[in-house]
Image (cartoon, rainbow over all chains, first blue to last red; front, side, top):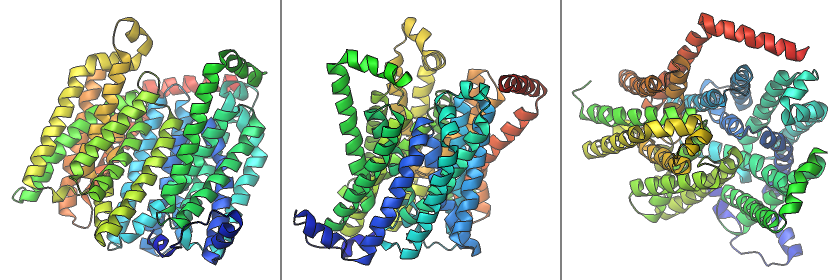
Length: 306
Length: 287
């Protein structure tokens, strides 16, 4: 976070070409833009399914497991990756098992379990940190990320994780979509909805924990939820909405990074703010459109169903 | 143990914080609003930092932020209950604002921000002064009283909002009142267990109580009792083992009680029968 204060003291010249030159003048900025783009693309796709499946809470909980994972690994001297893969994997399994066992009948227990998992994970993280003889400066970067200190190696690692995650989603995408839209019918048609749900949570957990390690739990979460929710608000059709989600995520990340470069405040603040404003604009526009053309609005769901 | 003033303060404040969390938590779980509670606990973090950045009393920032955002969350949803996606988006933005205030505060005061941030996130119940503790106990008692006062209509409105509305119960107002109470609880508990661990006291004892008994009033009492038990035992364990932070001990006990309740109910015979029936149902659907 403090790295932001050494950045450009001058504001943007508002000439796009020279601003772009200035943005890409430093390698750390290039790395940040590359990492941000990769994260935005991955989060745009995984988050789209997450929002569709109404698993925002689970997504947030899983993104926070990066914290106990990393601090635990720090404590026993393992690599951070091992720590957060173990923690997010466990958390995903517990939440997934609870969600499966309860079906849809009892959402309250599912939310209680997710909450308990999150609190316990964070409590573990806090314990590990205090056992580590409190270098508490670390917790900030774990939660809020150090987007501007990313190395080229980390960009490659992120790209690998994103490729694996997107590849798996490409394979399981159709049945997962079916299971997310209508679980009962999908199950009747022989789609293994429980296994898919569990697999999706595991994928979400692993992808998000890996990303949170580099960009902070906060940023991942913002990119997971805001662009897909905005996209699903704008169009109910699947392919355009998925594409829009990715495009919005990338755009929000670039604008946020550029703002953080030119004005010395944390990048997390800018990205979440841009994401929030985008969503609000879409929501207001949607409300106005629905108000002006109630007939068209009523017809739209019918088109989506047909 | 009781000879130390800091421990007595922690016990006094902790007991009432736990009572409020347990009672409010019961309704949060019943209404499946744990995510809203999660969001509000993070709002508490932003509120505390905003107050610190503006140089006003942390407590004012805490309560103003949590109750204000709670009403926003309740207002945008139907029947005073916000939907997950809206919560998630507001929530992410609030966290972003928290980072902003942290940066603002740290550039203003130099150093010391890590400590304040950590305190807001993870709490410092052993650091409460006698007057802090008395105030925390008073606020906790008020929240508890408010919840008990509306318990009956709120229960009705939570279990069957449609029928409750027909019977003339102001479902929406109750929902808003309830999220405001959740906000106040978040602000209150942040001082004791911290913004990040608050969820443990809200969700785990209530989840356990919901599993153990179907009787709502019994479950409400059980939820509060379990929260207080987790608080007491956690404080005692943390006192005995100095390297164990109190917040961690409290949340660990609360989670353990939930796990125990889960195992107990999973092994209960009628549940197993119901589970078997459910599985048969499941199998039928699959074939």
